[in-house]
Image 1 (cartoon, protein in one colour):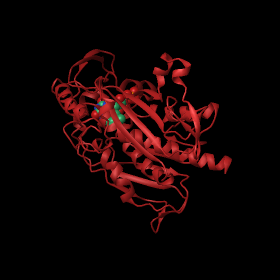
Image 2 (cartoon, protein in one colour; image 1 turned 120 degrees about the vertical axis):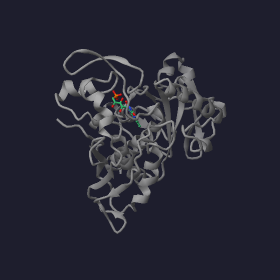
Image 3 (cartoon, rainbow, N blue to C red; image 1 turned 90 degrees about the vertical axis):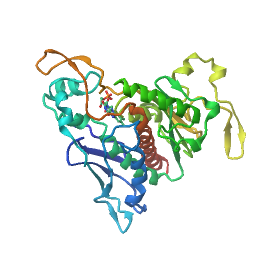
Length: 355
Ligand SMILES: Cc1cc2nc3c(=O)[nH]c(=O)nc-3n(C[C@H](O)[C@H](O)[C@H](O)COP(=O)(O)O)c2cc1C
């Protein structure tokens, strides 16, 4: 069984490994006639690109995308769109320690237990290099739903959260952390520097909001928009938690506190709150869709951790190589891409059933 595809009508498949010649995605089901060029995809890849600051991995990948198929005279043809990104900065020798001993927290042991054979160079297919392909596919998805605006930001790093009162959308692209709070961004610099110097790593919470999603997208029960989004976000490397709207905090509220009161508005009901995160009964209400995603700390760290070798002997592993001190930061553009991919799919599904 191979599970490298996601989506129903707007469906994408990713391929490639961290240290292979290239990675990419095949996007199938994209409506025809949409203007698409590499310039529509590249800016999103540039946001996720490694090596842009000392707070991310120092692997230098230009992440230049090439469209190999599915576009003619600048427009999608309705046939599979193949996207390719070359790997140019592989250093496989950096991973010699991983060849024989498993990194606790990474996928090394689990892949070996399943397949009995693995490409350990840079984590092979389990490397988050794969997420560049999702970002490329997500850029195509955005063009299917131009009325939707998707924005993700980092809400907390290492347990240090932004102050919502300081939220400034313009700040998100003004610092290396996708941080909307200028004060928090200053604190995070010191926080990440100290974790990195100690050979450690930090986790992060990413928030993502989609506005302009019309009421009605989604489906009840087994394909709730909540579950589609949760599956999409949970499929991202290092993600260990997903909340829709108030999520776990809703369990501590009373009914009247958690209700999103409604009153008549000019274009249908107007909501006075959004605890539900824009989804009720699995279907969009027209309110902003709100998701929060928890990324664990990077498991490849310099601090030695107890492990076992492939031969089952006790060992200690210290992962050198080049790693993100906080994977959640570069996770933000990936969260945006997954939101776009789910919503593009939902727009086609809704049109298919309801016209
Ligand atoms: C953008 C991004 C970059 C990542 N970079 C690294 C990294 O440099 N080193 C590492 O050990 N894990 C990194 N990860 C996380 C691993 O890919 C992930 O922990 C691993 O595949 C195991 O899967 P799991 O954590 O989902 O169980 C990264 C994740 C993301 C989303």
